[in-house]
Amino acid sequence: MNCEVSCAPFDAVRRLIALVPPALSQSHRFEQVSSEPYPTKAELLSCLPPELNRFDPLKAWGSLGMSVGLSLLAYGVGTQIPLQWAALPLWLLYGAVTGTVAMGCWVIAHECGHNAFHPNRRLEACVGFVLHSLLLVPYHCWARSHAVHHAHCNHLEEGETHVPPRVSSPTGQITEALKQKLGLRLFGWVSLFNHLVLGWPLYLFFGATGGEDYGRPTSHFRILAGGIERKRLLFPASFRGLMLRSNLGLIAVLMALGCAAIQFSLLRVLCVYGLPYLVVNVWLVVYTWLQHTDLNIPHFSNQEWSWAKGALQTVDRPYGPVLNLLHHGIGSTHVCHHIKSTIPHYNAWRGTALLRQRYPELVRYDPTPIHQALWRVATRCGAVRQSPVDGAYYY
Image (cartoon, rainbow, N blue to C red; front, side):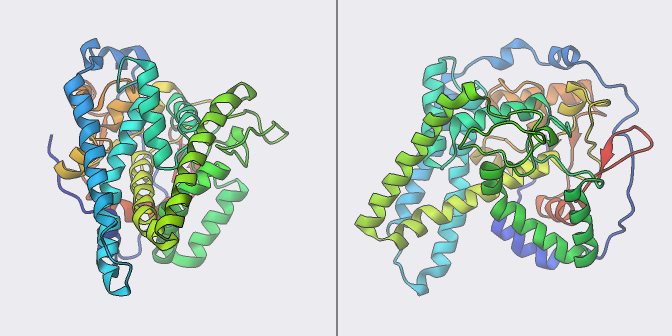
């Protein structure tokens, strides 16, 4: 598989200034992904032999050890950087590097949430809970909403995360009006800020970019009652115990950070912990946004959606050998991950090759450099409208 080394997120944003393309046509292109009929779920799964789910303790624990060890080393360096304005370049470099390394811990916890890390479910849940709590992610609640995302990928009503608004909706009308008023360039910068800086907290607290059936807000921290505008509950009342457990994990970490602020100063904690935390969130949104968003990716309503069609509308992209090592290939093997999410990351590469061999016209791979793809998505992808060709919805 050919992979190209991409830049870190802050470097990518810097390069965007020089690589912003000229104004693009805003005409809508409706096109089918392939003339080949979509396979069934069973046909897709049959491409992935059972041995791909085989647990390899050396690779699993080795990946965890690498991510945790490098993260501890990087955070340790942060404790030695002086809190002076003259050290600002060092702090920015520290935040970018440490956040990029710590994203590997996020990915391992993500594997735990899919039962892809270890056959012992209790041990696996403990690893995922600790790693995600340390990164202020409500582990059990995220695992629940993420499972909904996998079960209804690219479903406008029942989908979860990165579900676009329709142009006929109030949100879609506001988005398109803003794009027209600001122009593509300024709209792109606003979109980048909203997604990369605000996107993850807005999703956790309010359910931003969630499916239409779940209404707003949809909090990962509190069970919300149903209503006229809430056809489905993302977190039913029976989930209250696991939600409480997730919240207690976050409270414990926040208390530890508070104690550290008292002992060492609030500024030290904000720099050592806060800067990498922001970069981890940037990476998380970059990956998920580009995995599920682009001009030719269809989204489906109830009448057109099927599990196989939705799962195949994810994208593998070239993050390069360094990031694929640090982040366990999460951005370059995502189609395979959506077809069978219990496959460990170290076997997903073979699964990806098998799927591409069997369905070369349906398994998506976009070789566009990451910073260029990110700018294209930020400037062009606002609201979706229905295609007269296949009934799907496109940007």
